[in-house]
Image 1 (cartoon, rainbow, N blue to C red):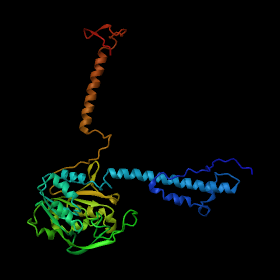
Image 2: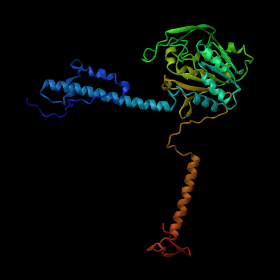
Image 3: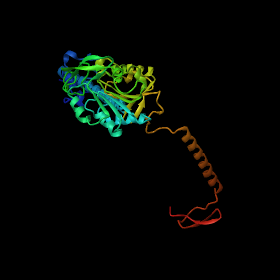
Image 4: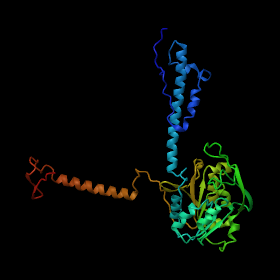
Length: 387
């Protein structure tokens, strides 16, 4: 059958392949495209073929190719966006205990005497603090019955470490602790929904635990209500705001508080905005821990609602004597005014001197015809060097 000239033809072996593993499952969707969901034929009027079957196959292949191109482009864009966010500390919080401790210590202008570890798990964070301050008074809070003996074995010989088998919240009483497996790092007071993660089990297990307000607990210690608490770390899978509320007026006596924000806050329906206004009302400054250092979060933005594990430090401005300038410095950073003035002054002097020198000898210096030829300059005999 005679065919008209083809302006565009999709190859019989289409090259529509998803390039990235994370979206390969969408390839199944693309392969299901058939005549029932084809777009308007007018969109493919650049395909000219009198044979209907061939024309039909070309349409399907073209749609598949278009879908794949869009998906690959979107994935690349998303990947670059996540890279930029990660550099700013968003999603940087997993397995970064050493960096977290270092960041907190850098924001402290005193040697800390009291450290509170809320959500201690198996004590990894506390061990990192003890490496730097072996004599610091530490209060651990970990409700998991599975982790209790681990903490006792680890710190029982240290008289300055006080281990408490309860959870902290904004009320006193009993509560259920939900977990996917015993001693899980994901254990939470909320029964989180995790079935969208193929590799994770749901929170099908639970145990009853004690919950306390921190201000009530503090009354049972040797310390008074006006005692300054230097350093607090909170990692309680979505209930960080409840813990902060449980400090009551003691919050004003804390120098710095590190807290986590991430996926668990989706389940507890708490947002970064809640933390932002909580600390703003109490005159705290918030910083985000990032791979390039701590970054001040000067203003709230909806883009801060980033639900991958991110760690923040709230610094009480009442005790703050450290002024932090944005740590993020682009590679091609502009010079400061002082450097600009110095550079401008130097360039001006150098140019003036250089111009004066050449003007003085203009037309008086003979041409060099030999590398060892003598010539007279400023009343002295000199030889041109080899260079």
